[in-house]
Length: 235
Image (tube, rainbow, N blue to C red; front, side, top):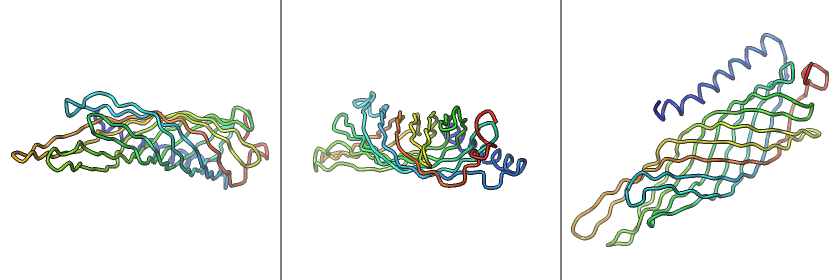
């Protein structure tokens, strides 16, 4: 399966989740039975650049970094304590690593995900999530031997992400933690070296993936119908 097909699969999942949510809402007439969530979080990012080209730089660059961001989501509450929702977020990151005088960076990440969860306790939600991920990356090439200038390139990679998480609710606030894995299309960047006689063009290629650990808080907005006994666990 190609990387493009893999990247599109989570987007298809989002449409399926939206269709199911719409169907559930119409069938059971849960008017207003949804909650908005606005959050902030910190994250630890264990990312890897698996360099394929050039040969002298090939190998894996793996580093850990820290960042943070904001999120927005909407959850539809269903009978039996089930939750069907959609979530988006954007985060900044400080990831940086270099190899053979070439520097790679991660500047930001954004995701658009569906999620399916269940309340295992009136105040505790566990969920699985999957969707599309977007990664802002940067590249600084090796110094040119004649001018000492360095090629610079930025790009946004498109990929997919999936993970699990939990939320603990308290008086309209949810404390949450989640783990996400993300994989992306190949990052490509080009360098040109001029030694005064010939110009040599070098193509750089790297496959990128991430392991993200996030912890934060969310503000819950909306009327929680579970308080009326219709949405809680075992109802």
